[in-house]
Length: 241
Ligand code: ZN
Image (tube, rainbow, N blue to C red; front, side):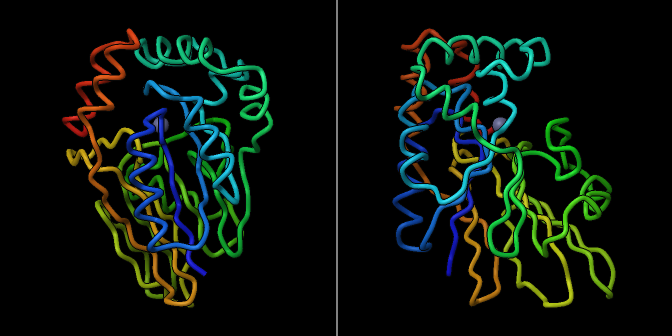
């Protein structure tokens, strides 16, 4: 069994389609860690595609912002503008679907959350080595997949000590260790690489590897500008930041 683990799609249908095409050759099922909407110009199409293709989906802070579970005063001005615009683009069924998503799910031996497994609805970022290592007490499975920071990373704990790596990680899963993996962002990477990121979790090969997929960034940018969303949200796609 091989899972494609996607996070932070952010209404970027061009990136999502490219990732799903790549995943079709490398994975048997799709898991989604939230922030399907927000920032990008095609939120409803992304929700529809995720809804039909994903085996499990958890909510991110942008789902909670769009559905009203979380006050938009918590968002930065760009995120707030995008959330307000996104609300106008989702029909009632789509909003109800997002509102019903859990904040945590378990698939095989992995916990899925958007931000931190410790109080997922606080939306705390796991960025530093310390952030991740402190989160291992908050889940019981061997693996935990997270997103939210839009930067791939891996934290591991075992008898031979802690381990931490940032970047496009490729991890051999040791039976005596536990792992947290940030799979990066499909629709708005922030690690200076404009290509979409996702991870393949291969249970038989005991491996988790981040993959990068080139997509039509210019098309996604043009749609953001045409939608009247903040131009900064278009420009950052090209910078990967
Ligand atoms: Zn996000």
